Length: 506
Image (cartoon, rainbow, N blue to C red):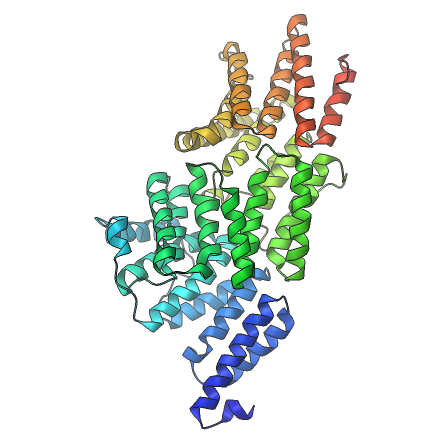
């Protein structure tokens, strides 16, 4: 306390630096309560807004990783206002469109080579604004997609006007995310992802690798390239080395999430996830822990390790879209189509969000759940088929951008929609066979098993003896693939169904 009040500036500066460092270390090792107390000391005793910036940035990071999204949004917007970077209180798509046009105009004619030679920033307040936007983007991404889009473009605009720095790596990587997932401009998005990686080298910004890798290898490159699992794991390791624990855990969360659609057993994925869950808990990373704990419970439902049903209700302000997607897919796979549709209705803000290529699974399972309910009941049939065709349209758009990943899902949903259309029913068998072949080629156990199961059900529904036998055979093959995937509860459900209709067990 004496040092805070000392007239000698040297004592004050050293005290400020020590307290800020102690708070960062406390947060980095998971001692968040102690870090919060240290930050309160700084925010109470620091002499000016500029002197409080570092403490506020650390507090903001703790709000994000501590799952306090509303508090993070409120704090970041106030800090940005004081730094001269205001945002609309209620952003709309119009605001996003206007900023997008402005950003494109500023980038017009600038190649990656010329941008790499762009001058360095000298304005300390603009650099501070970039730092706050960098940290706040994670909170906006979780709870306010429109604000995330605006923050990404503002970072690019500040970098172009005031100069580049290490924070500009995040600016261009998140702008790449926006272009790929919201604007549908995958080629341009990939270009800016590559620029972000090049800027990491220019500024030797190792500490920014976790943030940039999440955007580039988790969201940008998967649209056109195979998932780089090794790079996501590198982002995790570097995050632990440099103290960016929150983004280290986001990297590993993306790694696990992408593994769910890989040729990998759910039991192996769950084994890895449980180890990472322990780390998240030890570092008090509440957001990523909650995200992965929900996913773990849902995997256990598929493997048969848990029979507990997951509530689809929104019981948390930042219930992440990943959780909703996985609830949707698990509900469908376990035959609860009504619950699957309910999960899809909780994702009405989907088109405002920056998503990876995995969003294709949302459209697949939502569309198939609508078709299954169409077959089960005569209620809302026109609404069901309309929703399924809407999903088909969205999947078709994604398949044009990322055919290797999305085409198997597109052909499967086409087959399901055709199966309830008298005019197209003759083409359904061919659509299912193509979907199965594409799923096998992609290596996705989930896609292949679901395609065989739906094909089998379609063949049995024809009522023709020869096709019923062929349908039973497809269900047996589906059981085999579910077994390889590790979805033993689903495998058991199908075997019981086969026994009821007279087919021998696998």
